[in-house]
Length: 125
Image (cartoon, rainbow, N blue to C red):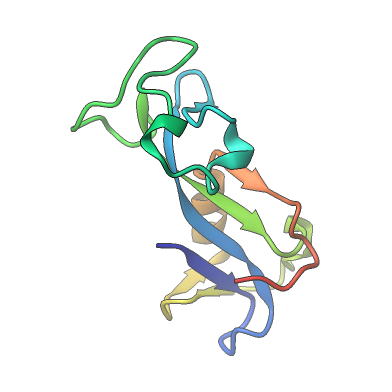
């Protein structure tokens, strides 16, 4: 399930969306999607994904720590430029009603190894 982020409580100013993006090799910085990171949200069949990292050969094992070896990752799709989040802004709001500090939000975004900017300026959810 994805989570949308907004500059305001009323959800009028969309920042972007965090989404599950499949398996990722954190050691090689590569998605296990055979078509590449740009296609992580388009290819959902088992055969569209490598069973192990095509670079180092590591595979996902239950119990792998997130962010280590091969483990799940998230993507962030931007609706505005990151620079457009005012430094004076104190909070960000998500679609679940949670209030985030700018520091928390930036940490979360930095933990998304796949980031898309092709929707900047477009209205999406």
